[in-house]
Length: 136
Image 1: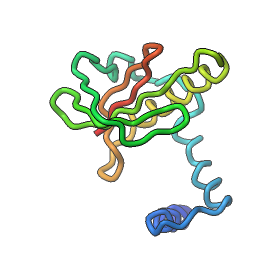
Image 2: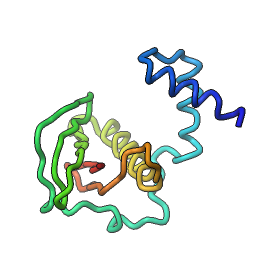
Image 3: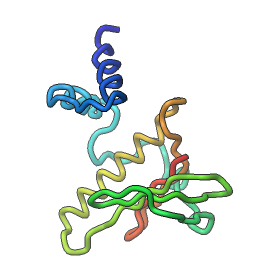
């Protein structure tokens, strides 16, 4: 139980709006290696299990963006969802490979996680140039 104390402390600091110290951040990030190895295949799950039916996906307004992705509101199979679209750069092949590995790792992690306080994974699509993750 002592090992998880730092997690509760970090969660409280994030909720209060305080930035994490470098040590707190490294400690939080280091747990990711236990959940999914970088660029790992999605073991035990075939792509057909999580593959999105794009004919059932309706993309609405954008509400967030990052350097290589945008997040939109949308509807998937009559359900309100968030849709993360990842841009694949055509001019930088190394970056495209890295983003592909990160995408696979994120899908693998979301596919396995089931908890009431974590967003629910719905589906994903990894057919270049369209990389998207659909969550509730």
